[in-house]
Image (cartoon, rainbow, N blue to C red; front, top):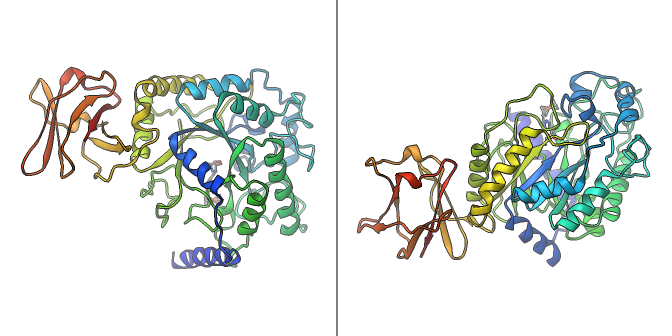
Length: 444
Ligand code: H79
């Protein structure tokens, strides 16, 4: 354990020292960061050649497949039901402000037109259409921002220095050359940012592939980030390395956990940033890429509550969907998007454009706040005492005088009192307690 911490420390020190001149985000970058926090919901899409196998995006590694056999799926990749406009419409309807799409995952297949190899959706499949290009156009027209996921780890290239995963894909070996691989990544991200200029951010993943190396691996990320920001200064860079943000990054991310938690084991020692936007990603079921046997979906109510909890911590929720090989969204995910959208239509302003209220988490739920209002989210009504007719919400209160308390979904005003010893009490008629989240707006 100590050795692992030491390696992580060394890694972050070496990474920081390379960028010693200090990254100063431009005004346009700061504006993009601000925009990024105004909508709390993003939709993560894991879709690539792996959808053909319906076994998740790690199938090449987990199935111990040979890369050339796996690649044969490209010859029949023909997602006739893919429609970028329909996806964007569904995400907007759910209340999302952006989507993050896997331009290239660890399996090395590019979902965009690239000059680096024909192993891409345009040149290597009968489909022949530029998926990232179509999504960028649809996002731009629909007014939702596009972020692109990009794996820095690669399971098929000979020049990628093999780490902990993808060891059995049938590479010849002996040709590892990070310099060459790094230049390849530079070429691809340049393609992404110039071919699809509406791209607002890059979401990197895979650094942990070298996390247990005896000698810390130098990913040269500060150099990579400088290269990206030189092309597009307002590109928001985030990296799923599971440790404290590096120099040159613009937002911080947490995988499968709220900031401050570590139930999934990816956030050990990662403090939440107080200076940059924060995002957490989570799956609707258990898988990222479409997995035929995974029907273990979270309920719509739980997904909305997760969004609300994230917002209460000043954090975005990047909620994942794994589309099927034919390009359609699994009906279970589509149904949840609709449910979230129905809730967002009446409650979006209690999460979007809000931040940390400063009040502690309560037994009954959480709070969010914007400049005008405080929102009480009752997501665990069973924790409220009741007199049979009303659920009685009480919380410590040393804030300003309360003007009104209103149920957000119906605009019904509720009576409330603030006691001399500093407790706010709101009586919620039992029939007004909502299943997902009873949101009360407090004006002060
Ligand atoms: O894209 C999705 C996943 O494919 C990818 N990130 C999300 C967003 C991901 N998969 N696993 N992880 C991230 C976490 C890393 C798992 C590891 Fe390991 C387990 C790293 C170290 C132990 C695999 C096994 C790599 C080394 C050993």
